[in-house]
Amino acid sequence: MALRVLSWKTLLFLGLCHVGLRGLATAADEKDPPKKIAIIGGGIGGSAAAYFLRQEFGPSVKIEVFESDTVGGRLATENIGGHDYESGGSIIHPLNLHMKHFVDRLGLSPQPDMPSKLAIFDGKELIYEESDWYIVNFIRMVWRYGLNFIRMPMWMEGVLEKFMRIYQYQQFGYSFSSMEKLLHAMGGEDYVALVNRTLEETMLAEGFSQVFLNDIVMPITRFNYGQTVRLHGFVGAVAISSMDPGLWAVDGGNKKVCSGLLYHSKAEPVQARVTSISMKTRPSKSGSSANFYEVNYVSESGAAQSTYAIVIVATPLHQGLSDINFSGFSPPIPSHFPGQFHIMVTTLVHGVLNVSCLGVTYKPEDFVVSDIFTTDNKASVIQSLHSIDPVQIPKGYSRPPASQKKVWKIFSSVSVSQEELKKVFLSWDSVVEKRWLAYPSYTPPQRGTPPFILHNHLYYLNAVERAASTMEMSAVSARNLALLAHHRWYQQTDKIDQEDLHIKLRSEL
Image 1 (cartoon, rainbow, N blue to C red):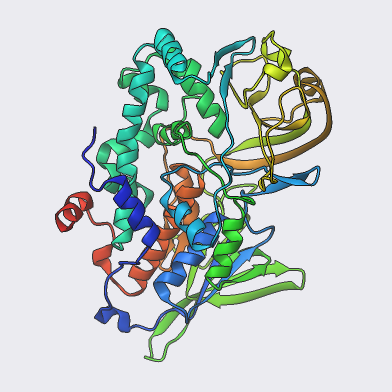
Image 2: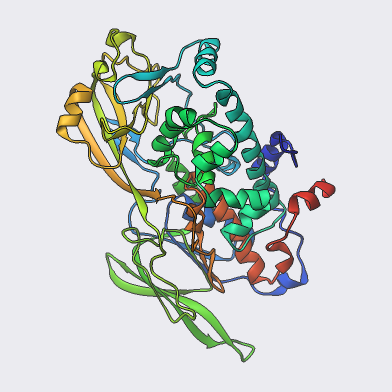
């Protein structure tokens, strides 16, 4: 087990306090703060950036957030039968300290916990079905997979403990200029290596069996990222962490965090599509020239532009997700970075499940599994199937049995055909499909990772998605860029890209 820098309880306390220990005022702070900051994107990354930038630069800075669609981005809901259901990002880990802090600060609350059971389907039958009894689950796993089942939580403990260091670094005001340097600060060369080799290679090297990877780990990566165990090791570890107990969601919908953060930060939403960002120069009071950024955008009122001292791009610069042109920069900034985004189709079905399609012979009313993962098989396009509850749990609500109509969420990489639906459901009265360019295709090695810094005071928040795409990773990146923008504005270089922080801070604490 890795040596803890701080216990997770202490880190949780620090994360929730968010005292903002970026240092006392220094001579560098004599520089005037920026007058205007633009954030492009109103998802969890952009809204978290607004919150943290307000913390760093104070109340006098005007923060404008451009969003062409709905605030929340890939956090979204769909209405079925008068109730809203999560169609986008839906689960939060108990050690996601930024998300915990947001919910507490905004006066929101976690959704009431509903019991769940997991099964794994190989295309013909359930090869694993969770029992009410822990000892039964334990014996089944050990009988089939030996010590792999016991060793996986131990391996994950080491990965998570290194990840938790980032909260300590950020609490003391440290920031990083690239994703590689952030990963290196958390876990050294071994941590950086995780993004440059597959999860399969990583776990086989740790002594896990191929059968365990195919039967247990593969269904987890297919559920979380729609990809096999040949995605890179870091995002694979993030996927595995979704099996930890204590996962939660925000009561009323996770997207409420985004709108709440924008309101709390007093950011001004701008309903518009940004078309270009260009660098301009104008004389300053001192007689020298000063650079600023002109943001051009299109709204219902037509084309317009505005100027900013700092710009945060909080939307993926990838084909199909944005089309922002950058002009006047040397070296040039590309409109799209290399790499593909993975298509994930979310299908919400209000219907009665055909349990016989899963190879089970008992009565539907006795089928209490809520989450069905699948191995890498050709029998169906369905990657996972979940019984889900409304984002606002009604009083006295209990999840209906499989013999009754309820809402099921299907993840797949292509649309689910009518023929496929007829196999899986006995009947249905509502089907809602949502297609997402959800996250990158995580094929290692990760070459040409986009930078956090596109230009002097122009930053790219979604560079973090090359490591992993989650709500918390976006929040970590938002906190990092708020600190980085502050330190670069006030030339506090001692707070950027420091090495061996876990050793230095251990001596301070």
